[in-house]
Image (cartoon, rainbow, N blue to C red; front, side, top):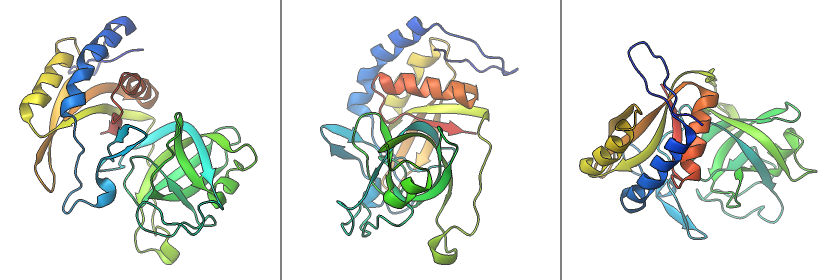
Length: 258
């Protein structure tokens, strides 16, 4: 596993895995006390508030821009049909919807079954799944589209492509699908209301050779300071960096593409 230092020529500097793991273990206690959820611009929706399921706290992220993830998808059907979803809608197992633990509601996702290449588009309107290792719960209809019904689960790639707008029949009138395989990637590891806490976390990483920045975010209630670690120019490498941080307690860590 590697983390990277960004310099003026954009050359990448590797750090050994042992060094990285030691750093993340030492720092992990900082976020346990000070990590807070980002707020959406304007009035914060209830679905964007932090919540706790099975003693795990989840922090919905303010934006799905650049979101790209691989993992296990499951589906839910008749047992939940007709019941309310997390955003107050009535769940329809025959609609093209999905549940995600942290993405904003109404995020449109391209879901690809890695095993067979089948793709479909869903809209996030619920929270879940809350089973370790699963990243998305698809409606019955969406799971049918990618041939995931029989096995119950499928390894998928999910990419945020747009938010629902006023297109025909609730579908987006335009989808912006970006090539995210290369670019400039950061992993956000914390969001603090007190700048001093953000600086402390930034310092820990910069002292060990990681390019780390603090971005200001003006939320509905206060000014927040986001700490982001440079993770390289290739998405695959950035995903490995993100995974290392998540595995060491940074549950809210996620990739940002610039």
